[in-house]
Length: 257
Image (cartoon, helix red, strand yellow):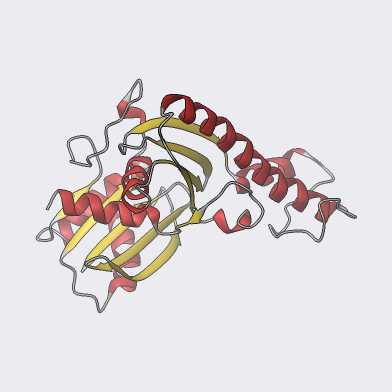
């Protein structure tokens, strides 16, 4: 079985695959101060009982990746391991000014989106600490995208800077016109971010149509832990694939096996 680990700025997501089938997943908090031993204790408690045949990992947190390498060298030394970094075969051409700037998660998301939804160009909207818009050509090339502040950190920033406002539960309010402060904050957050997604997707789609006039369909795929907040509200999201990054990690591991 393959263990996949996606270390993000806020959360770390782990998944177990038996060939192409996802068997189990877990989501835990990411702590940039964790040591290799602490990572091992946490991960071991989740994967006990699974006989692993490989490991695939990506990280957007350099300090955790460093400790994860130490953990792998100590506890997974005999396990075929793929770490998404320069030199690893992903099959994803990076058509950007500086490929080294592109996060590993965006690369594997591109591969997974093109593999799963290969009928044309794709836009991946990853709702995490930041909201990432990753644009994929009909050939599976990473064209670039847009980065916006994430939903949770935007709410936290507003609550910390406005004396009479506070953090609220992120749920869909009864109506867009809030009748109290809590509903008003929920409306502005949920409907506001859905509108941001729709607006950016529309503008990106216009540019894709100009670049690829023969492209028949642009698929918009939502992923990330906060994606459910805008599902059914955003008018442009076609698919929800919560395990997109883990699937991409599996695909890259297979290419480097």
